[in-house]
Picture 1: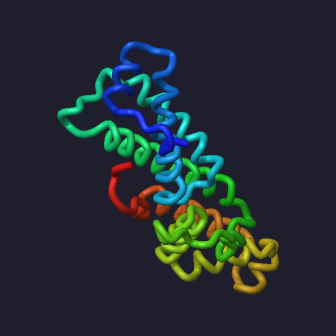
Picture 2: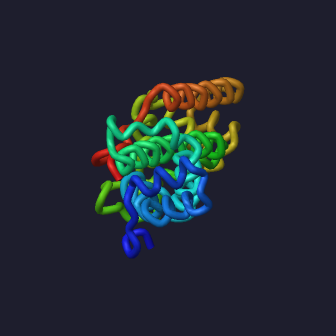
Amino acid sequence: MDDLFPVGDDQIVDSLKRGAKNGVELLLTQYGRRIVFIATKKHGLSLEDAEELMTDVIMEVAKKIDVFDPSKGSLRSWIGSIAHRRAIDLYRKKGKKLIEQTMTDDWWSLIGQSGDSPDHESGLSLDARLKERIESTLALLSDREKELLRLRAEDLSLDEIALMLDIEKNAVSVAHYRAKQHFKKLWETTDLQIVHGSVGV
């Protein structure tokens, strides 16, 4: 409960630099919930991911406290910038993992299945943002590429698709593979704007 027993930033910095046992505890007490707020409300991370990120941010701040320069900004802003950076990194990591997991033949089914309601602070949940990015990437594909991905995702065999499109089975296989590779390349070279609001805590 970081707001019930507020402590000064100078006290936190001093405790961390001296290696006092309560340094990390003071840091967590003062800024823990705000880091979680940034992760969940500004970046749409789940509470579980946000709490893990909070621990990482606290540990990074404690480890790098000697490089903190109050003349360049407050401790609050510094922690905020670290929290935002780590949240963005985690978002991108999860997005990459999503593509790795879903570029199987059933990945198309994810489109339109985001069950999370939009967050009022950021306007988008994590799932919604990933869904938006997937749809934005799909829009860059040709109609034939999208059709091949959709038909394969609907669990149609190569033979069935070949019959539907009136092309050879081998041609379907090659075209489907190329469509997937094109999607992956586009995904890696495009980036959805995911930062909302200021970088302060």
